Image (cartoon, rainbow, N blue to C red; front, side):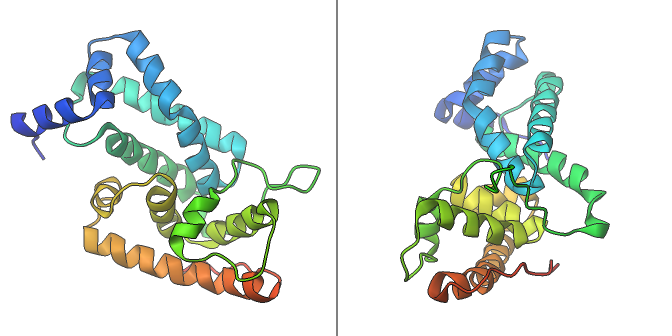
Length: 217
């Protein structure tokens, strides 16, 4: 879809990251390094929760930035920079995980100490979701339980939850990233919240062992 001049001008005026990307389009290496500095950790965190492996997540984040750089000459701002970046990241992750889909099972990568690998879940996002426990848990325990629950979601639900609760994208922005309608995103998130509660509630309320959900379409 063609991007109008007025749309491009609006996002250029509103989003400093768009202005940086326009400098990248003009082969400004410093601007590209600044965008990487701003988004590297966020992309690795997102990919870690999607892929379940830190090493794979770092490779996927690198591939995302490589695609950003390769497409710099064709860049026209039709959305916030973060929306455009996460669209590329979504495509990269989907392509990488497609080959694993036939034998999907939740892969919980643990360090030798037994702790979950990757970046911790943001507890404030859990609070915003209405899934805080009635019994008292320490933050480390809570992060691990939530990580298990998020990993149990199917890929589309997991991506929507991560973008909404942890990257703070709106329904409209998630719709752009995932090539869905806003109403479809709302429905996807509703199903994801229901699945999260199915996993989390028994543990958070009574301490029952968390059971991994079968992946649903």
